[in-house]
Image (cartoon, rainbow over all chains, first blue to last red; front, side):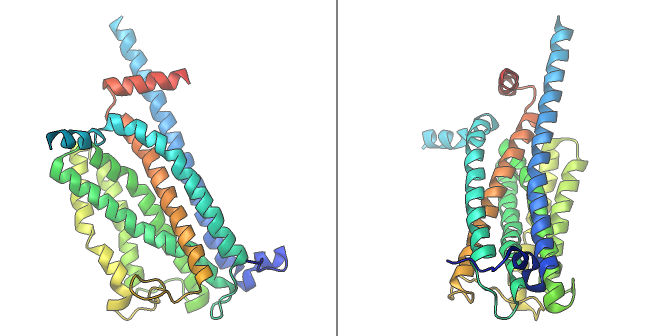
Length: 62
Length: 251
């Protein structure tokens, strides 16, 4: 279970396949970062909207 | 018998599933993180060079998990859709709707990483062979499902229309899976099978399986999160959503 790479530069270069390997991992990381952020934002927006509606209804009743 | 049925359906109602999902999400996030870190360590730091593909083969650690999940999520989505058509349960449509965006992203990742793998190994980003084309159709099925549901205002009718589309599209899943056997494709056959021992080194296999588990747990977490939002939206005006909203304010 030893580390395969001799240097960080070697790790980044990926034996000449750096563009393809990091292009794959980069987009995956970006998507798995953005998807939860968008999901959280959508939920917050919805909760705020439903609360506004509930308040408006209460005001109408009074 | 009657009692058991009631118990089962208890969790099929949004107001009891909502808090259950809320408790489950942190666990799935934790599992996704642990499996992901272990898989990345094994796959990107420890695993040796492939004797044919050099370091380029490391794309496999996201390409295969993303492809598996794109197919598996579709099957789960179609299962919920079928349940919704058969029993008209409220939860089914919400689950199917919550799964579709993650499935679409997985299909996109499968195609994207496949292109970036194909270019250095085959010399081309894309070929119209059976495996690649059927995966592209899967992406279009997800997009079609999302667009169809979004275009119908009444959620119950949107669920029904979406369910029919999802079920018709299920036929594409075995086509993707077996395409490399049925047709002569540029895409290689599977390295992992249930009947033979795997044709890849054990360390690489472990890294790939850990990454697949991580993608799986991630998908469950984000789909459950989205399902909770959909539940609040669709059940607004009910007493339990009012209570949830009040608790949100207290926090």
